[in-house]
Image 1 (cartoon, rainbow over the protein chains, first blue to last red):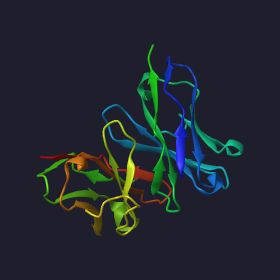
Image 2 (cartoon, rainbow over the protein chains, first blue to last red):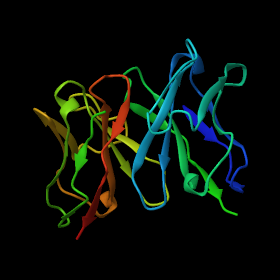
Image 3 (cartoon, rainbow over the protein chains, first blue to last red):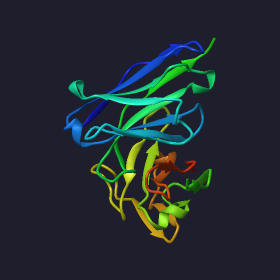
Image 4 (cartoon, each protein chain N blue to C red):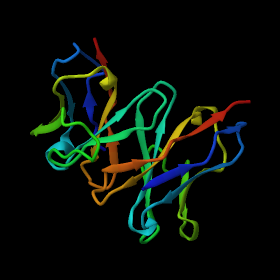
Length: 119
Length: 108
């Protein structure tokens, strides 16, 4: 069974760093890209970016480029989304999802990680 | 980058048919995908490609397209179909992914 297991809720102060994780299991991790999607409270889904384990190539939405970093540790089948300095406006639920061949087709999703940023 | 436009809210009487649409320039070039999200849950893949359903998705859900518009049709809506529905697609460059703003479906 394909599963994406995300790390737990993070509570941070503005300016702190944070790294969210997404561990894949039940499939060959290296064959499928991982995407990250933001959902702010009461709002819709926003695509942040993706990383391809086959070549570690990452691609970001222009809105998020430079603000977050997507990375991998293939030795433990895990993708990461990280900030060096969070802001209150980063408060949101963050989902990882796997794309199945077709680039924008996200067939399996993690359960989400809530990031709360407050002073 | 391309935008995908969805009606913010749609309602349907129990057992009736409802169509949810998604419009965008890149839809004439790339396949759209539909997702269902219920409150407090992660999105779930609903329809992909021309009109394909993953295992476990009821056949009352179907997809279609015409030009720059794709549609999700629920034939015989059930109470459990009350949810938010999102479309997504590549943008016109093909290198990015965009989501529609989502449609909140109310089953009356």
